[in-house]
Amino acid sequence: DAGITQSPRHKVTETGTPVTLRCHQTENHRYMYWYRQDPGHGLRLIHYSYGVKDTDKGEVSDGYSVSRSKTEDFLLTLESATSSQTSVYFCAISERESSTDTQYFGPGTRLTVL
Amino acid sequence: KQEVTQIPAALSVPEGENLVLNCSFTDSAIYNLQWFRQDPGKGLTSLLLIQSSQREQTSGRLNASLDKSSGRSTLYIAASQPGDSATYLCAVGRGGADGLTFGKGTHLIIQP
Image 1 (cartoon, rainbow over the protein chains, first blue to last red):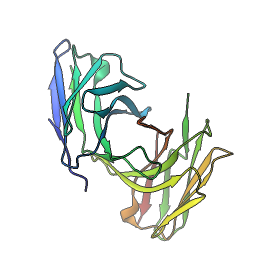
Image 2: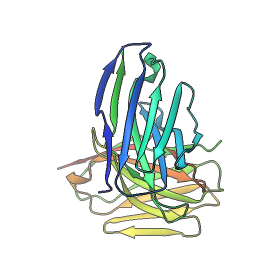
Image 3: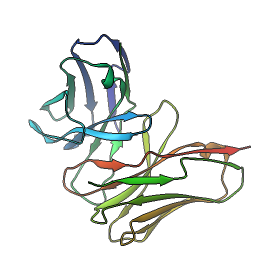
Image 4: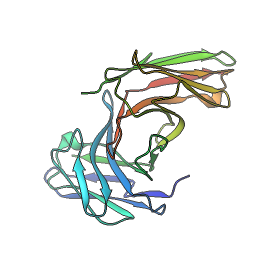
């Protein structure tokens, strides 16, 4: 398995509080991604990174920000959590911009916003 | 905007049957197509990746085909086993650093 960890694995928080999720990789892969998975929607891309300090928005980026100050860490921040952000969040990594490269996924973080 | 559809949404079959899962996508300008497996409460595991120039890929009892011009892919599972029970996700990539666009998945149950 690719060396990807996510923390925390579970979190319950209240509406309006800030939340930061962490993705850590030991593979030294260049590309990192945050997705959310919701019933009826499948996985949707929130933000992605193509290098240290290089990030861009995905399909559902509103209400989220990211940072990548080191190759191994990609942080997802909810500045003021809302109930609509209750979801399972997955981090993924890939090595190259190649049609042969798959994405490897972390175990996920289950976030509940009350 | 790329849309990926998977049919059926759920499937239950007896052990030993061969089965086909379907995936369709609206924009044929894809970089690659991947099939993933997801077990309950777990992350995703890559099963097969087909480059846009390829027609099929095989791994053990799994065979995935791609018809880019018609926007379709199938995942064929031979001699199904209870351990194959999981949700199967189809995803297309459009190249560069962009992420994947996923279908909603097919929830597969193999009855012992």
